[in-house]
Length: 123
Image 1 (cartoon, one colour):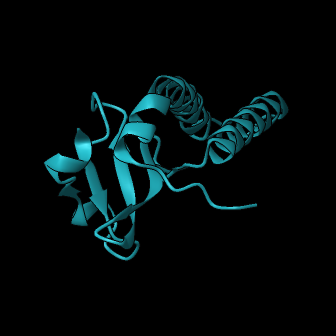
Image 2: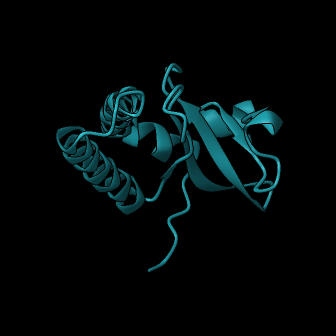
């Protein structure tokens, strides 16, 4: 399968669907974390497995769109979109509390290395 390379406009066009998937992942992830605090009864184990299965399915949906979920704590809903900026492979980086994709980082920089996408690429 060929890796999808996004422009900022393409990533932003996909955001409505990505946002819904991420909201579902965060909701199910938070429920899963809450269950982890309880005694592991058989019903809790069954519910946990169902949530894990649902989360895996939702993450596959994101992968099929060409992006990937990066928030394993289920707190801020990070999603990366492969892209090219200045002829370098980078990741456009979106948080679920942001209105649009406006940031990017290198593969080794991670979230802490986010930089604003150059304005001319956002138009």
